[in-house]
Length: 274
Image 1 (cartoon, rainbow, N blue to C red):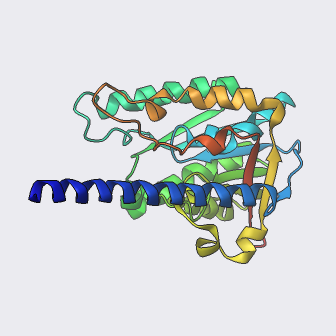
Image 2 (cartoon, helix red, strand yellow):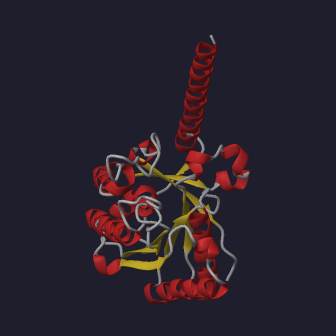
């Protein structure tokens, strides 16, 4: 009798967990559709040059693949900067070393960006340790900021895209702070845009974003280059497929669907007056 009750409890617990997971996923989908079709204003593509800062190899394709492809089709100069080496995505897996996954993700990034129209000479790897940006020393932080300042001075972009300040990932949020600090230090005049990777998956918007932050949401139609973006995302097989038969994919089930929609969402960020 006891075994039967235990099995019933386990079964009930599993069903309750699945129900709560699916309810949460439904909430996430509904809030994104609201943001996309009601809570954002249209964004027109421009011919402004830009730099995309990505904490990891795949963030640029997920968050900005459409705008990169659109602008490259117009011949607009673009640089993409990866802040970390991507080596933390399979931490603890005994079948692949950190150096191996770094090389895999670097090659995936080069291939994905080639699909989007970005030449390898316009791709930069800062190679900070994936997952450890919050543990950088003061000297390491300052050196990273100086590296970003140098890129800004050399390229003189008119727009900068970086992960959202509240993106629910330490590497993503620290990347935003490093980039914003570097922009101010460089004294360059740019439009700063934030793109969300984890924010729209892990958060309920009305709890985590202020009204003025939501009011800065813009949507960009990417219908004409959607196939390019989809192909670029699928290049990152190390992230959305299991690396071997005994492991699961890095990105969780249900995470990728919104990145295959024909729109991208960006948030206008305010910079101090120069």
